[in-house]
Amino acid sequence: MGSVKTARDRRDSRWDAHREQRRVQLVGAAIGAIRRHGAGVGMDDVAAAAETSKTVVYRHFGDRAGLYTAVCESVAAVLLGEVSRATTEALSAPAGGPRAAVSAGIDAYLRLIESDPELYRFVVHRPLLTQPSGSRATPPAERSARGTRMGTEPADPVNDLVTVIGDEIATVIGDRLRTTGTEPGDAARPWGHAIVGLVRGAADDWLVRPGGMTRERLTAHLTELAWSGLSGLAPNVREDTP
Image (cartoon, rainbow, N blue to C red; front, side):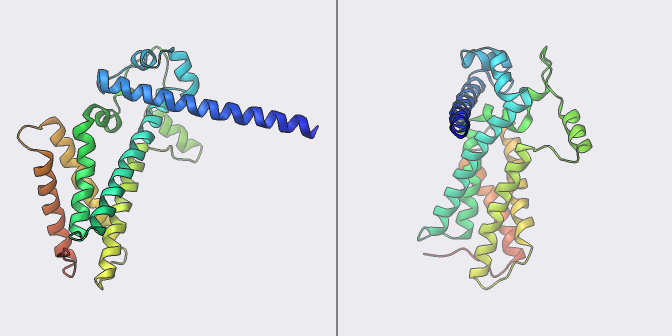
């Protein structure tokens, strides 16, 4: 009996790996469809890009909300990786410092928007979840209500991403304050999340009114605004000089 169970477990594991690989392929096809057709892409477009049927897509993700969440998770992994890399490199550079790290993090966020505006719109503004469809997807409000009834809150990939980035910035601020002899206590966290809110609000406006403002200029303006506030709150924090 043990050998039969082991063989079955191996088969199950093999199919799990296959399903995960197929999900990754479908997410890649969805991202390609978003770039080609815009943030308002439909499930038919996604299925066509994947060279399969909507039925197959639903089989792997359950509904449109499942696909949306998977795309968000993919984008979040890339964005968080870029923000972390940029801030780390800025802190470790000979002429770097906390201000340079804040600027690098802001620029990394804006760079994604500049290079992939439709993908950003898809993730942040959720058009796929508001489209009418013959195949019923659970509306966000109903999913929230159902989660409340079950005593759990459904995961929101966009808010989760914002939280993770805010925590990342807060860690940079807190660590740097401690190296200068200033103990931030619990202040670094709201400061970090305030910076993320500032950048996200300005970025959304920049996306719909891009005329005249380059990414470099917007990064400089937002860095100056954020750093002025941080410097006022923590006078002992100053940008390192070479």
